[in-house]
Each structure stands twice: as structure tokens, then as C-alpha cells.
Amino acid sequence: MEYSDLSKEQLLEIISDLTMLNDQLLEEKNQETSLNFSWTGNLGHWYWSIRSNKVTFNPLKVISLGYTEDEIPANVSYQFFTQLIHPDDHQATMDAMLAHLYKGAPVYEAEYRILCKDGSYR
Figure (tube, helix red, strand yellow):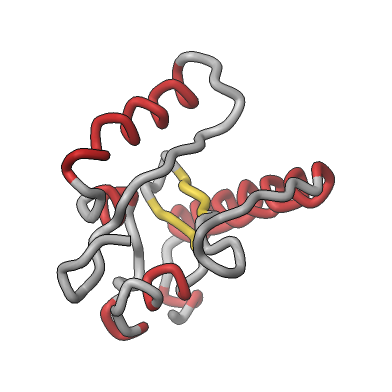
């Protein structure tokens, strides 16, 4: 990406997203949360800028599902992942997100199955 080709508004959006991400990472580091995920390396951590609908995440999360880095879009939206959630887990996962965003739940925590490239679920 050539930043010189971007508009002032696009650059400000990038700065805003990076500032928010940095603040979240610092807060996590200060809390020193120890979360155990079934995937090695806490691949479940991700950050969603609601305003821009861009998700920042560890690419190994997608690679561990059988996809290649070339198959990951340049700008990943929240829907990129939610469309892969097992149908039986989808509503509970969305309810957990809404509880976090609008009902005061301190964290968004959900356990769900996600579709792998080969058609299986993890």
C-alpha cells in the first residue's frame, strides 16, 4: 500500500485504527490476561474497528483453517469470520458480541466452531 496515494480522510482513518489497536494491546499487556485457546499461540485474539469494519488478527488463525495467506483479503471485515461460524453456534456467538457491545458484558468471549477450507469445523 502506498500511503502517498491515500486521501487525508483515509490516512486519518488508518491513524485512528492504529491508535485504537495500540491502546487495546497496551491494556491487554497491562492486565496480563492469560487466556487459553484450543489453538496454539492465542490465535483467537482479534481486534475490530467498528467504525471502519476492519479486523486485525493473527493471520495464522486463517492459515490454521487451511487457507493460504493469498486467500486472506487485504481488508478483512467482521463478516469474513462470522460467515464461517457453524450455524448451530452462530446465534449464541452474536448474542455474546451484542452483550459486550450494548449490555455491559466486560469482555466478548465465545466458544464456537468455525469452518475450515476442507469443509470440516474446528
